[in-house]
Length: 491
Image 1 (cartoon, helix red, strand yellow):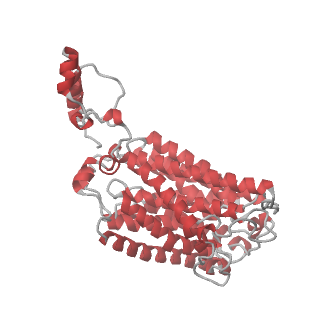
Image 2 (spheres, one colour):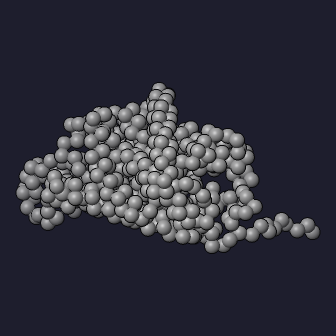
Image 3 (tube, rainbow, N blue to C red):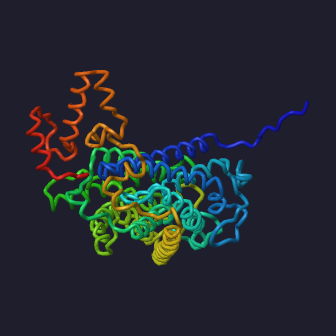
């Protein structure tokens, strides 16, 4: 009887475990983004953003397996400067070592990089906030991943890419992840158009606790997002870990102080926004710059990104989740700091990478390389994304935006058919939920009449629990009605 094939190639177990753990923690960022976006939106569209973020990840996984990895990291296209080839289509021959000296299988690397693209698409999904149809957006994301993300990932991370060969410093994705998601999301928001302004009166995030939870999950995952990019548990991974924390801490403090000067309140949303800006800035720089450089970087990112939230008003684009300010601008800050504070001894901490560094190491030409790289990423992404949006919006059945009536009802009702908070949806028509008042009255008699009366009483109150200034129950129904009418609704 013939024996089966046994794989005999050996790997470093610690390195393989480190990469897989890194991939798992990067995945944690996906629900983190979902909770963040959901909390920042209004209640009636809260669930749709969680759905959009998770589905964006599923689309990314399928695309990456289908041909994404091959286009971004094909090992058989060493002379291609722009994009890989399709030799690894469907993970064909993506199994063992891509290089005889590698300590891990190529499949582990492919899985880790897959999560990077999934996070990128999840960030872009925030552009659908409160008015974007979900099916067309998923089609958009698949195309975006193929013709925008994969080429730029190849530019800077594949050995044959022109940015890689030119010596551009981008540690964990300032270009492919942050700048692309921001520019792509901003252009998509432009094509969607503004939300109905009459529905934005007294707008504010519906659940700041969820915003905080989402930010915490993002920070947790981001630590390995940056640290595990070393692909080995070495000094450089620890250094990137610490750089990430310092940048996030100083950026969070800075943003919070800037908001305090205006409102004289310590804004939790402002704190979370600052932390995210610092984490984004650390993405391209945490494995390149010094620790004190990260300290300064966080402060600069907090200031620049805080004021960059006004860009959307100047350009008249409804960037509901501030993707451009918190991801795009912060990503650019991190890439520029690579030129300013990039040190050759930090870059070489993995014992493998050799680079001249930035100004600290007297490599002054690094600045124009970083600026050219940013310009190439922004320009290519903006133009190609605009073309994708224009074409998809013209396809019957794939119009990007929901109707005005659907926007008024909310994305959850129009696109999902479920609600994040069913217990506060009592104002909706119970007859649509299958409540048969006639049968209940015949079967239950007086008890059924009382139950129906109670439902209609609750239906008439329409008390928006998210806008109430106190959490105390009020037994006086007439007083509750007056209170509800006096308060503006956030839904």
